[in-house]
Length: 478
Image 1 (cartoon, rainbow, N blue to C red):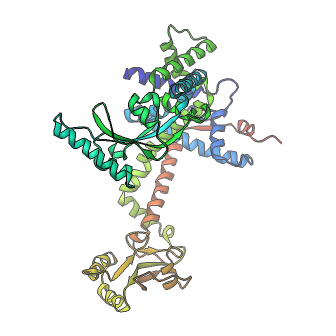
Image 2: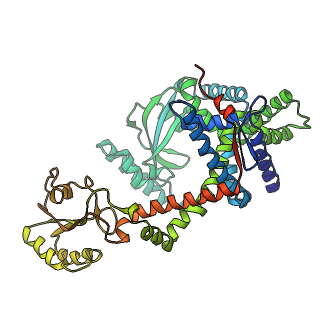
């Protein structure tokens, strides 16, 4: 069965290259793979919300798509598309997206209507009630245990009659499966309940409860929290369809009917309905171009993500030497565009505490300040600390209202309740003092560097050609 699924998946992936069919000119060729107009146009429509405004835009997006397809090809060459992890993830998404196209909608609608009509008949003129129950089943067959349960239910009724909360009493005393839900069962029809419980429950008004009674040897009380009709088919349709999705016989029959419809339309030579379902599954990307584009988008996107993780993101997070080399070889890349504050913001109970803290951290590295400050809060809370955007405590202008006022002399702030004295310790920097001061920027720049170097290698490895005449055909007609 596993091999059959994988072979169907392979057929689906192969068919992606033939999604468009018919008059679908090639707009570019990347690494020996022809990219039809329909595929590139799908990409454009996904990314250009305002539409195409000229040949320059088309060329820019064509270049981006070339880079994208080269990355995908590198993933294929690395064998990522054949790994079990990739195939399983792609298959799960692909099947989820394919399902609506593989079902006979008319059949499902007929089943849904039939289910609704059956529910109307079962519910009858009494409608539905929202049933709640408190029941205390005896734990053994002794008379003493029976008397205890009866007495307890009588006591519960007394409390309820005096204004007690039904849900609370159910949680505390019921020993049935609804106790944790406060005794709430569900919306119920009379036909779904034993005759004795149904007769009592459907005689109650909203928000009322019954006297204690015995049903099938269990002392209980029932309550009703609402009455309603089933509602129209349109009001129930979504719920019915949600229920049908979990009914395999219904869903499988819908697939078989749709497959036979496709078989007749496209002249497939099938021996039975299940064979037709397999062929439908393997050819769906060709049958439904819209689905083919969605399937390819996820297939290629997943490949690009995996190979980018290998070539860029993992390297950027682990290559400390590479990041340091980029930093020291390119100091201009890491200049501050405006001064920053390196330090911490302190909120103190009184001004004396601030001066004590200032003396305590004097001469210590900034990464030791927090541990030192903790000593001031032993026994009672005297100070609070606010750090910057990374472990070194860097603040940009506009990032913190206290720093803006106390360091850069801009804006205002309201004192913090219980800690009215706000001040800062640190210094204003016009340039980074160390590599740690630009850690976020360095990580981003190193990823950009790895991406650029990777693309250089890909362009040296793979050939590509863009058909400008084919691109021009995508321009809006004047």
